[in-house]
Structures are given as structure tokens and as C-alpha cells.
Length: 184
Image (cartoon, rainbow, N blue to C red; front, top):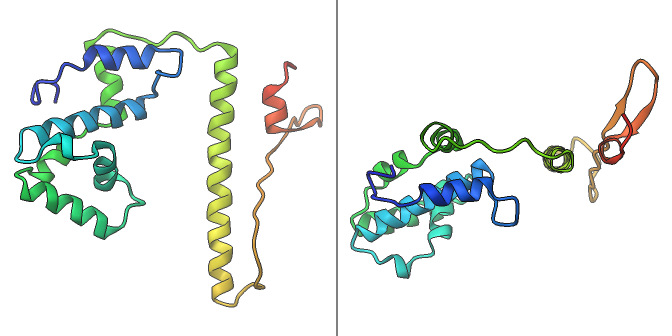
């Protein structure tokens, strides 16, 4: 895709992947960044001016599962009216795995091993996302059962508490307390 759209982006992808400050990006973020660059290049090659388009918002309308079908259709039609082949464009979007392969095999780049603090932070973030998702799915399910009069009505708050129990010693910890402690 870099060659197809004549993009000079390899160095920027590498820099953002290796960055340890706020400019650093995960592979998923890099894939979205790359795909938005592809979208912008496709728009520049069309009758539509990239200056008149919020690329990030348009990309979200084309790819995000949480966008309504109407918003997605409007975005597609706008692009098609201006000469962009949306299906071809979508097939040119890459995954985070493709970005990883590109960086490792074509740019010969590897991220340094994370520090213990970085490992803790990424682990906490992953667990928090799963915890939030579990709570949201549970709340939606209970509210659906309420609408069907299968469980009592009322405002619902779902709390997800994750405990880690060491079978050998019987010790029990809140997962976040355990991760943030220095105990081994």
C-alpha cells in the first residue's frame, strides 16, 4: 500500500512504534493512522479535496462497528460520488498484524523489552478494558431482561471485582493491588 499510494510513511511508523513518550503508538493505533493516511491519499486522487474532509471522522464512519448504518452509507456515497472506489479502498486498509510484519521484516525494527513498570501498566490497562467490557455487557443483558419483565425493574449498576487466589498459600488479592505491589 505504501507503493500503491506513493506514501512516505515508513520512518514515521517506525518512530511512533518505538517512541516511549506520548507520541508512541500501539500497533492497532498505527494501523488506524496508516489507514487514515491511505484514505487521505485516495481522497487527494479523487474529485474531493482532503482539505474539506475530517479524515479521522470519515475513517471512523467507514470502519467503526458502533457507527450507524446510515452514517456509514452517507460516508460511502460521498466518496463514491467523488470518484473513490470504496470497496477497493477498504480492501487496501491494513491490520495491526500487517503493520507489525512491515516494521519487523521490512524495516528490521524490534521494540525493546518493556520495563517492569511498562509491563504493569499494559497489564492493568488490558484487565481494565476487559473489566469495563464485562460490566457493559452484563448491564446490557440485565436491562434487556428488565424490558422483558424477567428480572426486577430499577437502575442497574454492575461492578466487576477480580480476585486472584494463590491455591498453594490461600492468599487472596485484588488483581490491581497484586499487580501494583512489589511482592513476589
